[in-house]
Image (cartoon, rainbow, N blue to C red; front, top):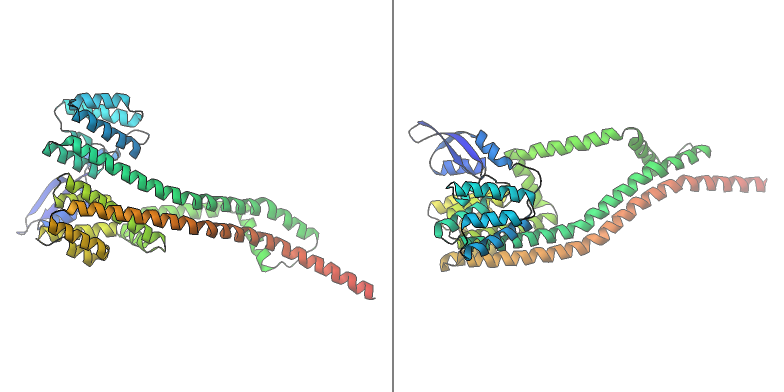
Length: 412
């Protein structure tokens, strides 16, 4: 978890400084404001930056983490010591980065460090949810149960991502193929037609053909300008997304994009429900659980609504009212949460909400795939058809002129 250094003023006007771990700078600012402080400055410490780097090449996949959690849980449940279990898991894992990290964690645990504290050094591998559940398992003496819940959560998250990826793979392939076909035609075929038109003495081209000719010339002679514009645009959006205002604007636009906005919203709701349910059933306090969920939900607008709900709960209110006022959570979700809160089965209700929205996402992805296929085919046909028509219009004009000229000579 990143570490930040802060400077605040208390109610008497005195300046205080300190350091604290938090999921993000914004979450730490909200936490300090809730405690009655006026935040003057917050910045990430050098140690915090070093810790967030993660180090090393490669990537630890969700599948690797899920297998690690399930095997770790089995070994702990069988009475194997923590250090011995880490040693065995480090030896048998096939992921080189995870192998190195487990060996370093084993060394930390052997020196007296807790497992959750040792894992905090690798936030790119073990996120806030992971650390929170491990810490809850350690405090409650049910580490094997926490690991089992983690494994189940990771499997559900992996399944959801796999479905989304599978649904978007086909449209992505069609778009890439369409772009390559258009670039190939404009780069190699169109110039040959242009030479043919010159040989035939065509001086005035139809607007479709002229547009295609200009586009072909641009690709052949000034392609670097287009590439530079794409690169600058991508970097500008990426930099804008690193700012607080930029993240809010981009995340709000994501929620309002036709079709995909609703899909992304459902995915965020499913992740919110599943994550919060997993944390609560593991014994994590609701204030800490909501803070963790806000850092992992993946949308700044929804995260802000969650943190506002957390602030209201801290003042003694119920969770359902601020969620309903945010308009980010449908009435069905809010009422289910309210019923769960009143009956003392909030984690179970959240699990049901997660299952409902995961089913909604699956249905939406199936419908989206069925709708996108003909749209992509029509899109590809329009692109190729435009090029074909633009190239043959001058030839038709030439043939008509030749035919008309031949008929005039015959009349004479």
